[in-house]
Image (cartoon, rainbow, N blue to C red; front, side, top):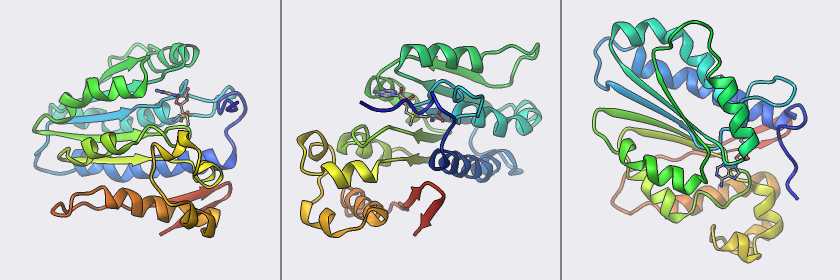
Length: 238
Ligand SMILES: C[S@@+](CC[C@H](N)C(=O)[O-])C[C@H]1O[C@@H](n2cnc3c(N)ncnc32)[C@H](O)[C@@H]1O
């Protein structure tokens, strides 16, 4: 049985992941908010595996990190009349309820963004939101913090890379791949050879995974993908 990530204080691996996500947002948001001339009027941020908002000890998860990092730009959003849409999704009913309570907490101010929170299976949520992601004059950031490996399959990956003005960050479990690559529940989602997996140490599995996803990019398409690996206190950058 999967342990519940949110029942205990986030461990070091999760804290590293969240720190990377925060740093990424810190670089991503000014590209659209701090430029003189507005090219993209609509900014969509999707957190498809939101969790309940924080762990049970109050440490902030991705939804609250997004709200934190957005808050310095409130006046810019108003002044430039930008449209900012936040989307949070969480499948577990109890976590979804906590997420709603935490994100929609009223502090007397009306925030300059819209916020949609759903309680759907990822694939349903993704397919439902996809036409909005495809709109012109919009930019998208997709954060896909899945547990395990199965949600970013060939179909989802192909849909993502065909979106314009879209950046995405997703996580995949190297340890699951290393331990269960031959198991049908893994091999149906990610097609890697067991020999390659066996001779690759845990901390380098992400490179095989990167090559696999690169192989799904059509030959005539310029697309940039990069990988990194997290192991408790360590981050291996490529
Ligand atoms: C790794 S956690 C995400 C943690 C979150 N980003 C945070 O910072 O707290 C993955 C989350 O996805 C949820 N989940 C599991 N299966 C899902 C599915 N099919 N669709 C949407 N969410 C799902 C889990 O309940 C869990 O809260």
